[in-house]
Length: 498
Image (cartoon, rainbow, N blue to C red; front, side, top):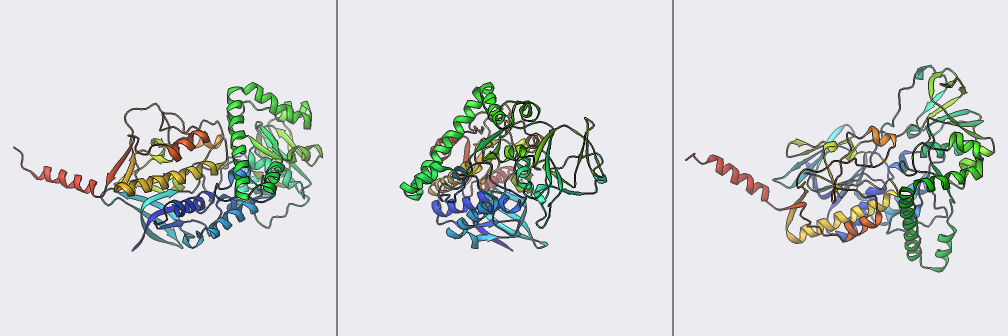
């Protein structure tokens, strides 16, 4: 037995709830359900519960285009974001359509039926669903485990070892010496947050990351809200934030040396030249990896107050009482936090099959950064690396709705991106971050447009919201086209040879 829907959305996080709202707005006659592996709404913002968890970009762009962010802080904490996503689900009637504890394991497409069969594990048994369309909104990393390198002597340490992805909710770190391994957004968030109770926090990094400070509260946004209607004020500040993000990124890529000097000078003003030289000067250019946000200078203030410190070195081995470094120095620790990154996956980790052929995402090309070559009626959400995730998630959801309505109006049952010939292969993400490099084999490829992800909101706005749908790359088929073709082929094979 199986249940049928017009659209199945996988994931009830920021992207999935947004996709459901867009579907309800733009395709009101379509039936849909959301399959969520966990038992709560929120995705990332429900999974991660470590101290200080917050957004790494402003909520005027991380928030939905259709629902203004009205909280005081633009750089919001995890519980506030979780509340925002949950309120959206309730406000737009999405919650009753969510099937919790349904972990999607397999997707199978049948061209003759123009139908997806989706198998999901629910409380120890498999449930089957069918749908005309599937929207994968499950993010790009594994929820059950983070990335953990092999550390020599790992088993020797007598204290607590915690990965931020699985922070114990009742963990008491009062008076503890804490060593955080890592230098990414999670480590930079944790370090100042843990100083509220810890004796001392040391962020141990193999190499520095670029950091940029930003006020947690946007006074301009609050001023606009006092004089303009809520949605208009939100639209204005959202537009300004988008422009600033894109201009900064383009300038950083065009003038890396000047951008580097500017970023380092701001940290030098806080901590002095020696700290910057030793611990805050990356080996790469700005935006070759994502910048770390430091709201209200909290990381720098913790260092100046002596509550936190940064050590740049490599681990030789764990010991019973901490970490021995290759320089010979020993860092004493009661708690070691392995902020060592994410384990990436595509399509929520589900096996994907098309007419009996297994799809290998690492060998596929991504059409407009949202559909896979030779895979019909399936879209996936993958946000920006240089801006807020939801900016692109909104555009992708709107694009899929446009595509569904276009197909309905013309009697099409399926649409498939098709490569027109050989194409130069390029990496999916032009970033040197470790988690992208480790996952290169499973990430789709990109090439020339429209098989290119430009990391440009302005370009995507024009292309995904207003661009032509029948562009010669998308192959549209009507109901029964594949069945008729198969019947014709069988008839030809049955004819006697002349």
